[in-house]
Length: 486
Image 1: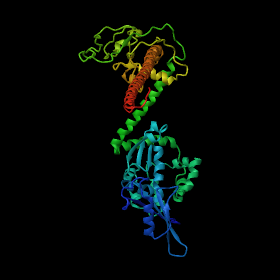
Image 2 (image 1 turned 135 degrees about the vertical axis):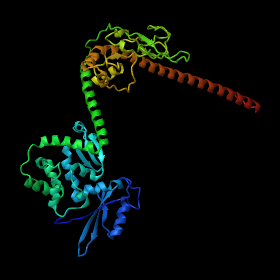
Image 3 (image 1 turned 180 degrees about the vertical axis):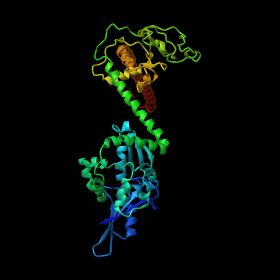
Image 4 (image 1 turned 180 degrees about the horizontal axis):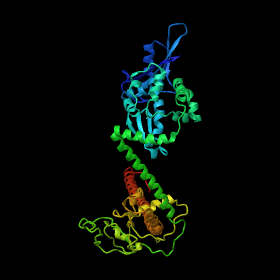
């Protein structure tokens, strides 16, 4: 910084140590070896790594005169490819903080990784996630701000030249700094900054620009102009920006839609009937016969008729495991949903108790109900109309309800679906849970029985072996003339 009254310490920015070229991360960097090497080069016993700022090393070098020392700070740039960027950040008493302060309300962020543009809709809820990386070239910052390269080439002789330089940017607005000064937190932090920039904010700007107004309107208009300029200079950034923006807006719409659907699912026992129709059950085949062709939809979109008759509850036979999901015609608008079959896994034997569905537990959350509903719901890709599945999806399946909206359904369609179909779905889920519960119980029983059988088998083998051993001992004792009784 020119025209300094007190130059304080001497700062160095270094990268790529010759004695440890692989030191490219904070943890892997050879701090002890580097401190020792610099102390030896400076011929001083005083030097250490920083505590509050561990990325910097501090040294004291004796100067001419009694009791005089010079403080030397050595800042490490861990990635040599970022050396030019970090030089720009720390040059002129960390001028990038002033640039960053101007750019931040206009949708741009400067940090150690480079220059970023933020997705406006995302930054309020996820500031780090809103950023789209643009560049780590200081010249790109100057292109956007409309400033020349004097800040890079050390082209200033006075502080006033630097102040006028920043004020010449099309992104400079004195009202911005006035607004920041009104913030107590920002005002208090100014004391930690370079006194030259403190003077610029507190005194130079108010003196040269006493009449500034309409800051928020200026922010809004200028941010749009900045975004347009960024996309002109960096077309590839626009793609990443709009992808992130679209993903956020879709997720926001998804959360809104889920809330509406959850609110429409009946609470407690509302609408429950003990005499609800039970679903038409089909037992899935455990093994597929290679001689039976797979059942596929016809060209008209209707399911091919099953190759074997559908079995009623209680039948002992099974049907092919390949089954067709209901077509769009099998929606609630054209078919009685109670007649849509449910496909269940086979059990090794008949459970001692029948399935008797009951309403879900009172502690079941709306989110859990929504997941249950989603596992049994599919959408017509032509118009987004929901229809019932004959078997649930996997437990880790995550429904995107907005897909139905994109296909042509309305929010009201999905809300009505949840309200009208919840008990259909829950009864189906009850049967699925019933089969899953008994399947696990039978597996445990079978394993227990198998273990007991093996234990008996092992005991029998051990008893036989013991008999053989005792028989051999008896014959041996008899041959030796010894008495032996079993």
